[in-house]
Image 1 (cartoon, one colour):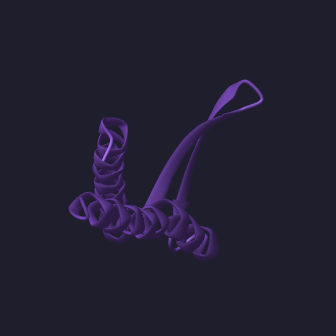
Image 2: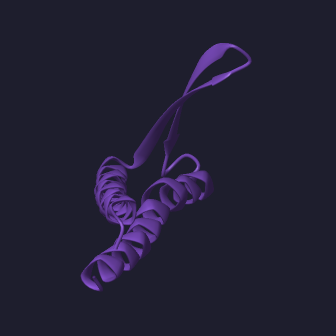
Length: 89
């Protein structure tokens, strides 16, 4: 296996593990607090938005899936693939 391929697969494994960790932290803290806080820029202005489970439950669950469950699922798939390829050497 080439050195580049080995380094690339190790980097993918590391980044996917980070994604899984951040997704799990997002899920746990959002479910404990019952709210998700976002900040972004729009039209050159800083916008801060807080979505609560009680106030806007549809948007809360949508953001939880997008920012919590999706990184865990995608990260798990990438980690499985990269570790499988690394062990195949």
